[in-house]
Length: 132
Image (cartoon, rainbow, N blue to C red; front, side):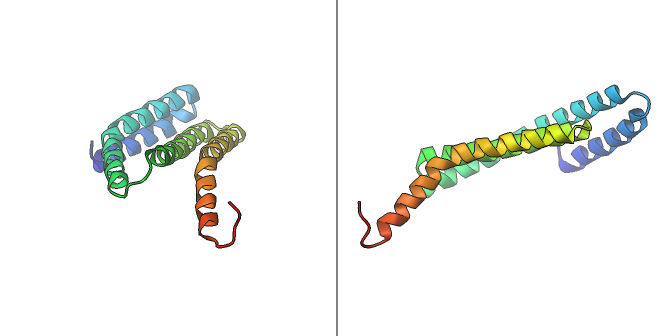
């Protein structure tokens, strides 16, 4: 599915959702959810190509696989948390959406600690006169 089809699907769904929202809000939300799933599934192939390219670039740069996988997990968590929070916000539950975003940020922080530690250790190794 190309971008014109995705945008067209989004516009048609938006119009239908606006029309249904007043009378059948639960059906409007299900239509929104269904549309988002279709769009998400249609871009999975492009996402796979992006990950393949990033993996190739990491191999060429000789990046440690554990760091590369961690960075990919962090990116994935960020997108999933944002995606979920936007859906929840669309349902009118902005307080719950904020909690989903907070949970995503905490998961990212947990995953980033080993990378930050490695960066700090590397910097300390370059500073002359440090113990260790």
